[in-house]
Image (tube, rainbow, N blue to C red; front, side, top):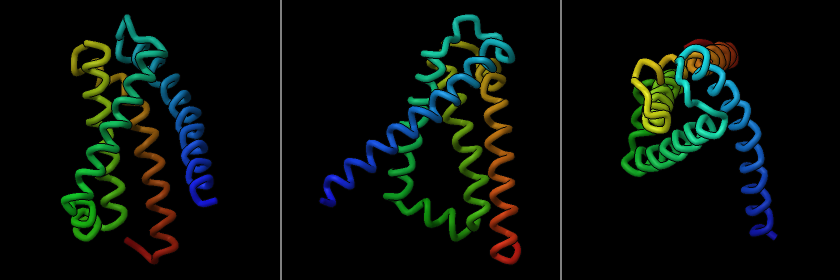
Length: 138
């Protein structure tokens, strides 16, 4: 039964990723067209940017964990510092993925990701404030 539960968990995770990935791709597509002025941006290649950045984050996260960098970050930066590091770390992955998927200039990729970066940063700040309130400060 635990194998079935594991497969069910993977299926749920894939469905959640598909839903939130689609929402993110919609936002990224709109920003790429409007803010980044990337003419050939489409929903499909915005989804590809999200998918490739997510896969890169998983692989690099696994490698960071294998060498103990995740624990080092947690110990030296604390939980909130690690969360903020993750915001900038993911921004780099998304900008690089956008640059290569869209074959655009760096500044266009940065502009395209800027709104998602702001949303991500606001959510992390809100989560940090909440954590600080229940943990008794930073």
